[in-house]
Length: 399
Image 1 (spheres, one colour):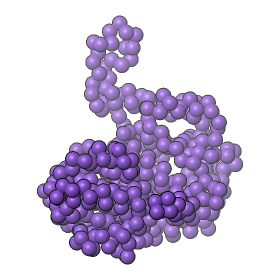
Image 2: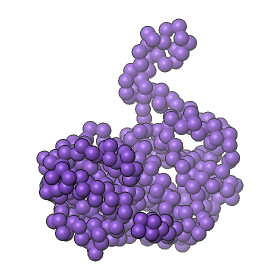
Image 3: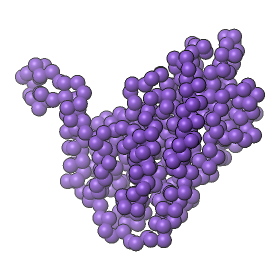
Image 4: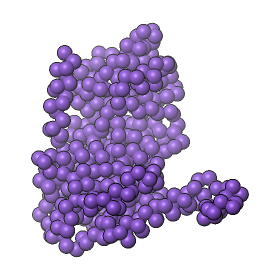
């Protein structure tokens, strides 16, 4: 993984030794990252997963926010899954019913994820399938095909799991939802999907070992302390569908961590090449208040080859003798060069191959950049107090 900054003068950033030391101490003692070194925990998790996935043809995962997005970020890089996995993070009543109304409770496994054990969306998903299995006289099969991941404490989900003798794994109480990607929350679906978790952890570990020399604090320092531009937004543009849910996870990680006390920089996720046709005009010719991160990879000679004959006498000979990947590669190069010539501040994170090891590095970098930005701005990276009022009102409206 290579990171290069363009039209961004990092030399002007002041020395922040005391804050940097605080950040390094926080990162190196962070439970969300230290979990990658716990080989015994991984071994036990693999054993539980092997028991759970036996005779399953499909796995349905209920969880929202951090209980969903991190796992999807990992699973999206593997297109040849061992078992069909479906994630449900929303409670739109129509789409949820349409998707699960014909569930085969004999061969479908359900993973229920909630750190608190009281997430209303997740509990409602669980309860609705309980009711459906009851109506179909398949309650016993449903309960025997459940794996619950939650804190082992006195919560509704924990009580339900104990009462019905459901298979359980513990959600580490010291790991917040949006930081839980390397914990059971992200790893259980990854194991089922066939992801090489050892390689994922290896990438994260290697990046951590070099934390003081790999430039992992540069983005935070630049966004928080450079004086030339008042950045209000940080745009992440990913040039691979494999990174789509990484982008969605990153938005939650950044937004819930940094947006406090009327401070913060808004994260935006764009998809290349799709959003070149919808957002690029604004990015290049609109307000100069955005910093850009492009995540690129090598697409050359990848994908289906384009037919040459169809382009005869059309005036678009440039597509001849190319693959779809060649076009993708040319477009990402052209976009970055346009930003360079336009003097927009940006950086490129180039990943030669989107695999488990490089994804482990990218996820670790994202956590470090988020925590360091929060530290420089003087906000708590690990809470989300503003959303609590909405949760209280939701309960009142239902009574």
